[in-house]
Image (cartoon, rainbow, N blue to C red):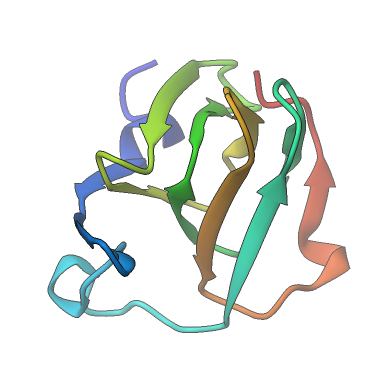
Length: 137
């Protein structure tokens, strides 16, 4: 569907550097954000086991940005109106950040091996009334 919500999903390149002490993962820079971007909260999503799903919902108002900082995952997206779907593979070693607008169902699936950790930034603080359960993929 031309002009659907899925077309508003943004995939941005991040940066990662590693040395013997560990790693630094820059998920999102101010220059990558829209001028009207709002800050609500920063949080972390974690799943230990391969195949575990985290999400399967959408927000009526809240926009979110996601970056896998450990492991591998697939971000499954679905427009509940058009049923258009998009699967985005993400890998901490190749940093990318995905902006998901309000109204798009989303879910992370841990592709393993090992744990998946995702850093997320939201345009508003969590409000249970803004969450609509919905299978993303």
